[in-house]
Each structure stands twice: as structure tokens, then as C-alpha cells.
Length: 332
Image (cartoon, helix red, strand yellow):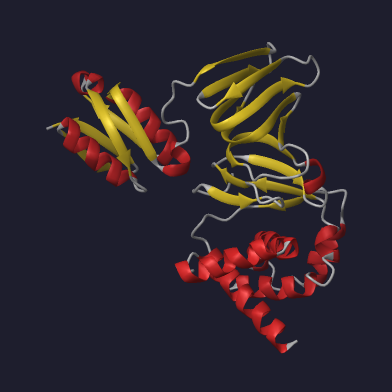
């Protein structure tokens, strides 16, 4: 019994280290082995992630109301008709509340009665300035771009594996599962995974899917209109005209917002800047028409905008300056 308690304490400590980004490779392997040892272990791991998201929400509220209590949290979770809203924190936003979350999980692991009463989870990244990471109950990983809203039913997710994309952009890395295929729903449009990684975006009256690996099916559930997309293909659907088109993906940087990797082949600087602005969310101006048309060929990988602009400056022999919140590229 004591050995089991000691192992539990170790595992919870390792999960907290992983959430904080401080876990060592050796400890990471221990945690991965533990998760793969038993399905129950994976359930505990996923529920701690869920608790962490809700603890961050509770922490934000507690700064406004010092009298917030566990009673109010349980009351909110019990309102099953209303979705639980999860404001995902940026990857580097960590706090001592993880320790509290681990304690909550220790209690919840005896029955998960509190968490299971919360059925609908709303994820909203509108308030944050970084791409967020989310692990679904089946282990599927989502990279969630800024200004994105998704929803799923946590209590029955492993039964239906449905995520609703209300607005925004998500990169999906699907975990193999014995249950139904993962589906992303957008109004009447449905995207079904057939073992894959893909980027999906819904903006206004248009939705697009670009397949990185595997195969997906885009389909209008009402009309039956569908498109089968293999790796390297893109599908575009227009909600206002019910048009569904597919073809070869020509956007080499469609997932640069996830991995910060850019590929440019004889690309005019104006187009280069547009791709970079989309990823780093900074305004970049180009001084001079000749510089605007100058072409760039090469691969760039940098977590920071400054790193990317330094490579461009050296490659195209131009000068980079910053004026308030705007970067300016000009000829030397």
C-alpha cells in the first residue's frame, strides 16, 4: 500500500513537471511508460489535464473574488445544461495551482463524480497571445490557434469522438482509437479523420482542411456532397454557396503557426511578410517597391519574429527597424 502511495506521489509530481515544462528526458520516459501501462493510468493523466484547465480558470476568478470556494466550483460543474468554459493558458503560463490540481485529482480518481457531471467543455483562446495545446480524452492532440473556439462533450467523448469548431484554426494530431473515427463538425459541414494529421480552419463563411498525413473526408451532412483528401491536398467549403472544392495544397506554410517552420521558393517579399504576420501577429511594413518585389528562397525556422527577420535581412540585404509595434523593412 505504501509503495503504491509512493508511486502515485511520484507520478503526480512528474505530471506537474511536464505541465510546467521542466521535466527531464529520464522522467519523461518514466511518465510515458506509466501512461502506457494501463488504460486507467491514461484516464488519470487526461483528467489531470482537464483539472488543470479548470484550476487556471478558478485562479483567474479568485483574483477578482477572494471568497471563491470549492462549493461554487462544484455548483458550476453540476450545471450540466451549461457548458464549462475553458480559457486555455499559453504554454508558458504556469502557477502553483498545479499542486492543488494534483490534490484534486487524487480525490477525483476515486470516482471522478465531480468531473463527470461536467459534460460540455468550451475552449476559447480569444484572450491569449500564444498558440495553446490541448489533449482530448482519447489522447488526440490539438494545437489551437489564437481567436479560436471549439467545443466537445468530455463525458462521452470516447464514445462519439466529436469536436465542434465554432471559429478559428486547429492543427489535429489524431491518436489511433478502437472506437469511431474522430469528427470535426462546423455547422452542416463535417470532417472525418481516417488516421491522420491535418490543419482545419473556419473563418466567416469559409472552411478549409489541409492534410499533412493520412486521409480525411469533408462532407456536407445535409446534401451528402463530399471530398476525399489525401496528404498534400486541401479542401475548401463555402457555407453561403454550398461549394466544395479540393486540389493540391500550394500553401507551403499552412502549419507554420504551429511549428514556426517556413519554406519560401522564389517568393516575393510582400507574400513572405504576409505569411510571417499571420504567424507572429505583428505588423510588418516594406519601404520601397523594388524591395517589395524582391524574391526569397530558403527555409527558416525560428521561435521568434526577430530571428526570422534577421534571416530575411541577411538574405535580401535589407535593414530591419522597429517603430513602436511595427517592424519596418527597408533597403540598406
